[in-house]
Image 1 (cartoon, one colour):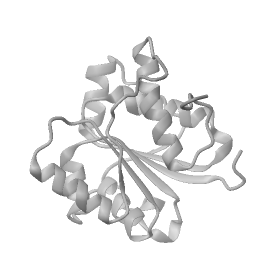
Image 2 (cartoon, one colour):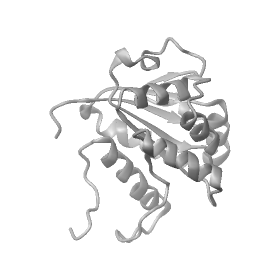
Image 3 (cartoon, helix red, strand yellow):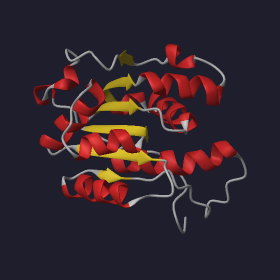
Image 4 (cartoon, one colour):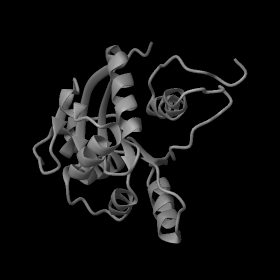
Length: 189
């Protein structure tokens, strides 16, 4: 297990793929001993997509602190709070575009801007496809700024047999990228 605990922000946008956000948050809870702080911000559309896709509003029961998108007094709105990473999962192309172009018009995009300016880990779990040139150019901007684009592209070498196992292939990779010590399938294990 890691010696240093991680301070992390989770952003959830209105992209399809609420199951990814739910799985990420649940897995973070299971490795809580590795976390110093875990703060969450949902866009309003994220809540609507969660309710539609997962047929519940269990985001109200998440065991971490949840902030509204207009709460600029959240600790992670400033670099002085010293967060280590931010995962936006799933990430809309609109959110990615605003982040790539420095438009911090809500707490989610402000937090991503702070993470980038502080040279910390920003991981954007995109779910859109196909991509147009604007998306690709924004991917490039994020990457050149130090962010990580991690498309929600499941892997199959672990031979997943359920939707949950398939989703876990993405979320385990995201948690690896964020620096967590997790037990997961490893190639050539």
